[in-house]
Image: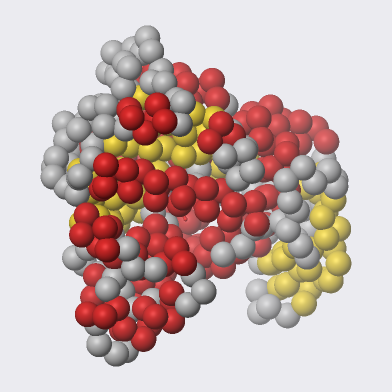
Length: 369
Ligand SMILES: C[S@@+](CC[C@H](N)C(=O)[O-])C[C@H]1O[C@@H](n2cnc3c(N)ncnc32)[C@H](O)[C@@H]1O
């Protein structure tokens, strides 16, 4: 990493450590449009895993880059945990976690073929939350064996073994919070390094620049208690870390409201001001819509990259004819409208599935160096 990238990396690591708990509450379990995006990704991964396990007869190692609080660990840990072979209290916890959640039901095929779910994240706090979540769901018996976490950098992935087949994913626009364009390039190179020799698969799922106005503005405004007050909102009276501003509701996609009402709390969580109104500054909004660069007063930064930018990265850093760049809406216009996917498939394992979905590998790629 260059010195500049290292500095931003260390700053972002602090930011993510400090927002870990609320992130879990308000984003992972919260905003309906984010939940829709996550459900789309999970259904997509289910399909890819089913295809690899059943139609290709492969055993798979799923590895989540920027895994945060272990959303995918929990989902696939539940699918591979056989409650019948466990004793109380683990078995009771697994059953309780499954109650009312069909996605967490035991899946005998995955139990056999999904050998492990690993992940890396630079935030120790995020990984602590992930482990606690898995323990609470009765998955302690899989922790450290079939469910693993590495604390470290997304940019340092080592080449993986060919068996089980590595499926490396970076989901929920994690690329957008990985230290700007320099970090995004490192990620493209890093996932390629991890899977290429093994003939594995990499998937990067991200938001798109052209969805900033319709999705991002309302999304960040209504989760500002997690990441801080967006810089396009005024006034900044309570924007410092001494206050917590809790929005009164979630702004959904295409909300055109130019203001949002928040309740302000001071450090001890006693009410500071109820019904405080924040308004959009139109010039600042215009810049965010044009650049996709989201910034808050808590040093949080995220990028929603353009479709062209992703196309360029896939072409510059991934090999010719072995990758796909897909508009989310072409797969699922209800849940993935603001999304784009870059998929690297060096041995053509996914070709049949992609043909079924009517996607072609992008041709005329660069050398990938
Ligand atoms: C948007 S969250 C997504 C978390 C998780 N993938 C999910 O879908 O719920 C992004 C995660 O990336 C992590 N992160 C950001 N930059 C990173 C880097 N350079 N190396 C490792 N993790 C990083 C953050 O700590 C955070 O947990």
